[in-house]
Image 1 (spheres, rainbow, N blue to C red):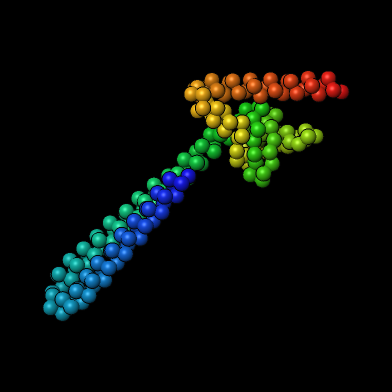
Image 2: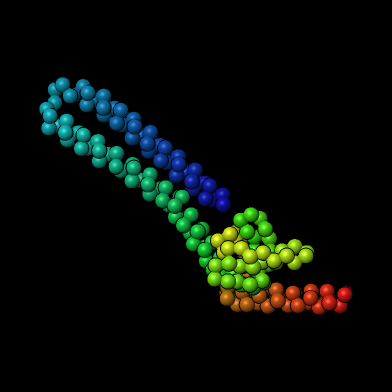
Length: 177
């Protein structure tokens, strides 16, 4: 996260310096052009205006490229990852909604998900787009990175662990009653 902040600060400083340099050069060029305007012909004035327009487009293109690589591209990547996560929800995943509700996925529909929340096991049906985080999937990815396993085998193993935990909890609850 610190590297992203550093990159954005450096790019902002570079674009500011480029614009300041461009402004200083055009101000000097405008003063020189005003002094030469009395003695120059109309053709050279038109050529100077064309060069000034071309000189403005280069910094503008550089600023747009910096904006694209610092802001637009990373946001598109985050949106794509969020949509992929919402499409790959599985029963047993622990999710967090945009409103902060935490629950475990009970069933997955086409565009809705039923989650179970709280100690009283209340069930809520919510839209897929409302889910902002899949806690279980994030844990699986961390485990896979730590153990060096492929992501598909880590998903299967962690799903089995979640199912086993639920079964053992249900058995304990039944025995207590």
